[in-house]
Image (cartoon, rainbow, N blue to C red; front, side, top):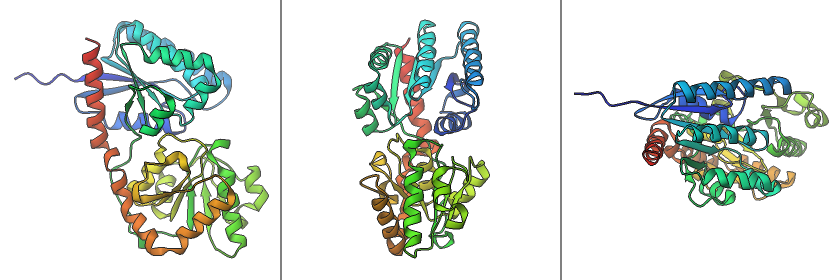
Length: 346
């Protein structure tokens, strides 16, 4: 009896950089879909512009050689906006010219705004998505609608295996925000909301990744002395500890697709308070704040902290909200999509 053929998918994206795309690619490498072997080419590094340029030049050369000498069955390209898109457009074009079926996954929550503000990018993106060998993928139905490509597939961000923490072991007034340093992520909203609540007599602490103690927003309110712990980029071990001890994850972002931090939080029973950019993905494990004002966020945080029974319900409901995003569930979704893409290219 012949063994089943294992196909190969080559991921092209920021394997070595910090952020959600990196986490997603590592998930693919650690949890290959059934019947598939995963490999990757890194297209980006954190550092200087020259370092980034050299990383892309090397990645492009590596991809060219792979497509010529040892082509995979499928190429999976991961893209965000701006320079990420222009690099990944080139990667998709190279793969299509080599006759390789290609999945183009859009991660950025503000990709629709990027296309609106850059007509040339919108034209190119729609042209790439129309290629018979290209399968575009969005993170959520809302994400797909905003981007405006009717036949995009939808597969969300990965969540770890469910491993809930007993609510009684959490520190309810320990707040957490896990994000890269970017204005659109809303660090200042989180900081000022917590500062407002502390000034009203509510003892809470906020731990933030992505920014350091010299961030203007942190310095403005007094830093650690005011309960604001700016931790820079945290290690996997630090992040795990924060997720399993905190009482509430904050996502006051202007734009999001399907943030990995939310998936990680819900899977271990950490309630999530998020902006409307996360509507439809939190289930009963989180709440949506209607706008991005400091007052609204301070009120929403206070409401969660004051209602212990509702908070415990959120803790217990989190894992169920991401049951479709666990490695096993996502693996079957990706395998089905990959197999369909390969059949379409035959």
